[in-house]
Each structure stands twice: as C-alpha cells, then as structure tokens.
Figure (tube, rainbow, N blue to C red):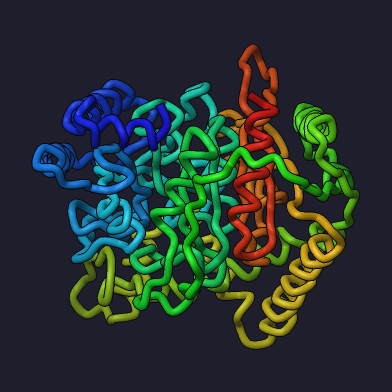
Length: 478
C-alpha cells in the first residue's frame, strides 16, 4: 500500500500503528545483516505508535502520515538516541533537539523506528565509509547500496519501512535510490529546512525522501517543505499538495543530452535504459528536445573542490573540545597535540581525505586557482541548465548513475573511481535544482538482475512539474 493508503487505514481504525511498528522492528531485526541501522529506537517507537492509536480512538487526526513507521539518516539530529554521522568522532553524541525535518514527520503522525547507516559525515557514494561497517544492498547483499544515504535506501528497499529520510549533497539520495530500485527526491535548495542536519557542504546539502513510489515521495515532500525561521537558507515559498494531480498527462517537453553518455565509464545497460526511457516518453506523446550540457564535463571537478572546501570549514569545530571525540594525551603534551590526535582518531580515511583536499583548495596561494575557479564553473553549469529550460524543456532527463551497483570493496582502493559515480548527480546540487531518480530498466551482471534509475531535473521551485514527469516515467517503466 502507498503511504496515503496506509495512513488512511490507520486513521479509519482498520490498521493499528502498533502493528505496523512491530512489523517494522521485526523486519529490521531479521535483516540485521544488511547493516541498515545504527540504532533502533524500539521502546520509543512503540510508545509513539500507542499514542497515535489512542489519538485516533478518541477521534483525533494525527496527520497525513498517521502511524507510518519511518527511518532517519543518522546525520539528522534527534532528541532521542544518538546522532553519530556514522563516525567515531560523534559515536556518543546525543542531540538536545530534533531536526526540523524530523519534527515535521512526527507532527504528521509518522513514527521514527531508528537511525540509519551512512557514509561517514555523508561523504561517499557507496555506503562503505562508515565507522559502523558497510551497508549491504538488499537486491544483492554482496553489492553496495550506493551512498551516502545507504542505510535509508536499504531500509526501504528491504521493506522494513516505506519511507526514510536522506540528505543529498552531490547525489546521496538519488544514487542509492537508483542502485536499490527506489524513488529518491532532492528538492530545490531551500525548499526543506536544513536545521538539525549536521553540515557537510552548506551550500549544497538538502534533505529529501527515499520511498517506493513517486506518490509516496511527493506526499513526504508535502510534509517536509516549508519555511523555517531557524534556517537562514530556508525559502519563503508556498508549499503545494505535491502528491495531488500526479497523473496529469498534459503537454511535456523533456530535454535530453546524449553527449553525457560519451564515456567508457558508462555501463552499456545504462545507455540502453536511457534510450529506452526516451523512446517510451516519445511514444507517450512527450516532446523530446536535444540539449547541450557541455559544462557537465567539469561538474565533478568543480564539486570536489567546493564540497571539500566547505567540509573543511564545517568540520573544523570537531576538535575534541567544542564537539566530538577527545583523545588521551600524555602529561606535558599541549593543546595542539590533543587536537591532532582527537581528529586523527575520530575521523575515518575518506573524511580526512576530503578535509585535506578542502583545506588545500582554500589555502593561501591556491584559493583563487582552485576554489574561485570552481565557483565560476559552478555558475556556468547552472547557466547550461537555465539555457535548456529557457529553450523550452520543462524537465531534463539523464541517467542517475554510470552503472549498476558494484561489489563491496571493488572500488575501495580507487577514490577517483568512486568520485566519478557522481558524474550525473552533482550538477543539480551545484545549480540548486530539484532532481529525482526513478527506477527504469535493469542490468544483468554476474547472474544478478540489478536495478537502474533515470534522473529528472526541473527549474528551481518546480517540484510539481518534476513529480508529474517522474510519475509519467514511473508509469511507463512499470
């Protein structure tokens, strides 16, 4: 059942929230080998579900997600339990408050059952960079689920919960959605409050849902979206009922750029999936318009200067004094030794790599050459998208990932290969655009049938257009 159907059954008394939550907790326990969760909030979830059922019994309406069990990526603060960011640096950290996105889910009646695994501090495209171990893909447990919202994707794909929150800095919702056969939505930058999200790159981060369908993702966005005075980047924009009118099949023009696939790194099955999606849309009466996205060739390079630079600044606070793990020091050793040892022990290899990349990009003598140049490229990338939309494209269609899920450990020794997994997704973050990954096609690899996804992008604040186009793709691929 959809989120809407489930909630309606709970509100009508045909289904109890306690039963749904118990089933979710049981499924999480039975599928522990996926390593999707860092913490389960079993007792609190049961208490919350009981509260929802009691409210319904007295005629109260808990909201549009009444009784639905959900999971939260563990870089979103929750007042209950830990918020670790999958890092030894924050292994024992307990937030005094809930992130706005979490609070809005609970205000809509949802029941949080636990915190999901991720690449440490949301830095990764595979789900392997966690201090608590790699997350496994429910479609093939020997393969990665994608990252960094690995646990959230695995929890939904495994049927543990129908909805989970992730964060997306360069594709961290959309990539795991594609590799696990889900819908993953990154809203326009500023559409969803980032208050309570532990920052990776503040000008790129955005919170969004992973779900089983476009309708479920749209309903989740209707709950999550809206201005928040506590987040200076939160936009004062009207929140629409995004889950309504999704099957509107009015005129639609889709921009396609086949030049994006001119790389040996793109798996043949991705090419087939992309062309099949274009053909299906054309057969359904959609206008296909060829566009150019020439600056996309520079998107990964620009992203891996801008994002690490912002991470370097954001993670400077984790020094063992203000926040995070504090190392033991010997008598006579100074404060600087304590800082260095705390950060060396607290951060994992990938986080250290990105901090060093970012610090170098911001250092005296290199700031203009690297960071400023990358910022100019960012502007040109955004201009490419703007030209495509101004030229008549309502949405832009691309692949989501260059290939299907790869084996755990296959790319661990090659950071550049992992960074290139972001080639189709980072552009939306650099330009601040809404984007969504929708399942479309499969790849036969070593006897496994692995899911693939296609990505749609829309102009800023046009989530309604984006979701209607995504529903069309979903229907054609279904």
